[in-house]
Length: 328
Image 1 (cartoon, rainbow, N blue to C red):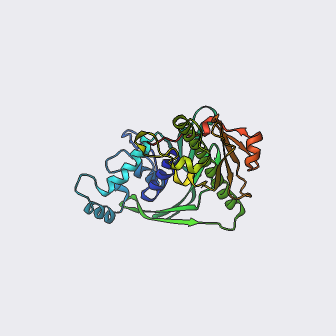
Image 2: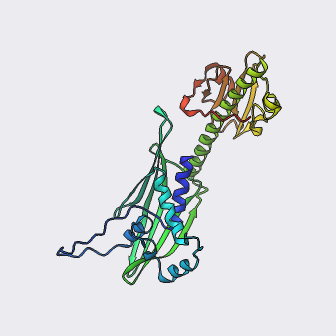
Image 3: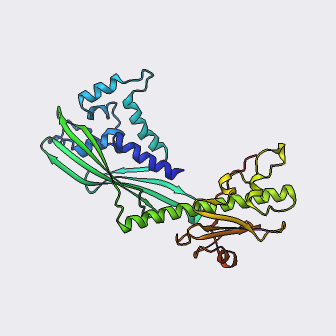
């Protein structure tokens, strides 16, 4: 869930006004030289994470600010304050922000580690400056988003670019326009491979969870009936003893035997033992096969074959499994 929150925060912050920690702008009255004028990039950084009361409003055109104030809901939360709350929520999530006033990177955001032991994963988002064109009193800043997981850049379903058009008004940089472009390089083999790898990883993780769910349901079924269920349909249709409600396998899609690009089945079952297997529905998908039995240990085979998994599958690290809550 943190991973989804990270992704959502990035895309909520960008369209509204991107960014991050404000650089201190305290002037020393005794200084011989006045501070350099604020750049358009510094103004963009200040807009969301500034500390002054007007850190956002002061960088909007006068006509925009007046319009937003007229849109005040009257409950103490204005249209502009809603934007500022996004930054507060992002900070509260525990993510680490860092901004850069110069150089190729504008913002980095690190997500707290997920998992335990050797399975801790660190997510990182980076916003790079692809173009910064200053012409007279106008500056166009084009930004790109990059997401990485454990140091490896992830392929997004699309490649977004954001252009912030800044213009000076009363000697202050104001955000005049935001434009967003989305590119889908459908003929790029590397892009397509990245999408395929991403989907395969998601399907495998969902399948590990599903196999764990079946083993949990089997254990509950055996405890109540004195024997294991020999089919997914039986697990999904048998009623729990308490008040005759619910089912041991409450995921109806999984009970049909197909889910997340995998085919599931229970085999080798005689009531005292069972085996649950999951094979990729598409044999050439490159996905692993997964299996388990009454021991509860989940194993995997790289060739995608259930028979290989049952005979010589490698155990899946416990940190990569998920025990689904059982619903009465």
